[in-house]
Image 1 (cartoon, rainbow, N blue to C red):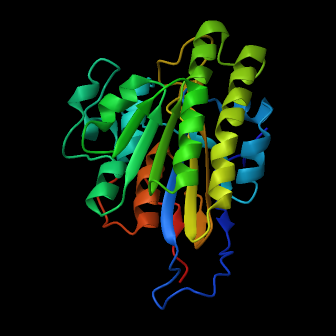
Image 2 (cartoon, rainbow, N blue to C red):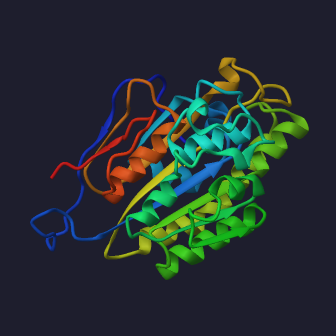
Length: 288
């Protein structure tokens, strides 16, 4: 039951870093990113579900139940995940449905590809293979498909081994449950699927906490909401989504209009990458 902040009022997390080995330019620890992507996640469903791992992790972070999807395309997975990965609107990245995933524009690279160009390593564990099409061949050093349990286990292994600087995960069973019996906080099957994601991602979050000599940005994001057993359309139940981030250095500030497109620019800022065109807003600022 992740406690999310109603509305979009600004909120901050103070710099809690106490590392005395930081150099003059700032914290010398390696910056790393974990993105928890949960397909079809409604904010009221997240609030109602049993999610102890996410609750514990994001208690000190910045969260909202009033985030938005991209605004220029349909609320289906292809446009949503393309906007999350690139930080751009549908009219920029060009993915308008689940049938034209390969048409994602080369002019709007994913933040994983940008991380690799900047000298970082990146990996993705994904349930929906469409995310792999969006990522293409230039975004990751490793891409592993699997069901939700396998995605969580792979992410935990990568993090525990220190294998990659950026780990992106995609969990799909919440969306499956919504399509099967309803995207609703009153649907026990939908809530059970959210709780199962919490169980799957818990070991990865534990692995992040155990890593020494690193600083982590962790983000929770989804591609769309839903209503009844569908999610295509521009109504609030489709467009309104939960978002959450934690960072162990600097300040996280919730924008006035938080969006799924904020994940990419926040990750770029955290990794120290050059500015790039974006339709989102970075939540993170280095206080040093």
